[in-house]
Length: 210
Image (cartoon, rainbow, N blue to C red; front, side, top):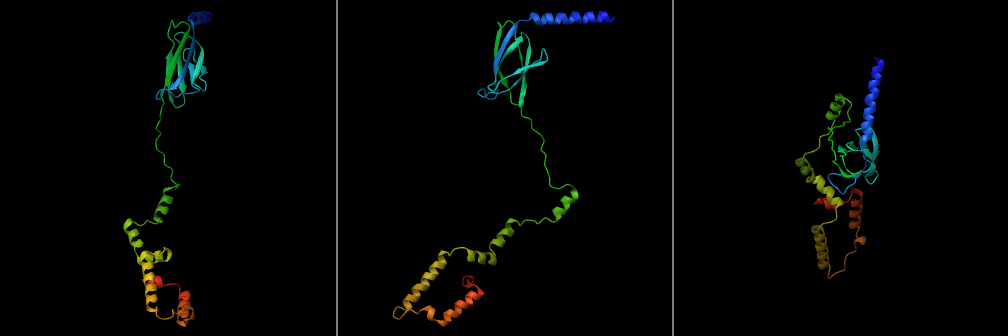
């Protein structure tokens, strides 16, 4: 019985090899392209002969390939990011077969994964309770128009037109008042020196009086 099984196996193998050898050889050539844009080349595509079950070759960096197959062989083209494409070699192709293989880009949408900085729920609750709530728009507006904020802005911002006009008017008034007399020199005025020393000691508050 064992010998009979071996004989049958050898017979089937011989028949299969004979059928394989009977099929004519074909020079299979072509270029692998992107199906969405035919001008784009897909390089280094793996080409597997599904009939023999062996990886035959791969296309080069320009997408070109050329190798020998048999008629009616099934070739599968696969590449990362593209859906596989199967090409069957037709019969009676006169020893050569050229094809333009179009590979369709395959987009896989992965589920959203969010990473949180808390290892446990208790840590999240602790940080949430200790979190400082930001002010809303109304509270921010109130702080921006408060007297302290306006005074701070007056000390840091440049003088506006009203302040410059007031200073010019005061200077013009002093010139009119003293046009028929000598202009007083503030350096010789002890009251002016006392006022200057007081301003330096207490800080310049003249602009805050408004």
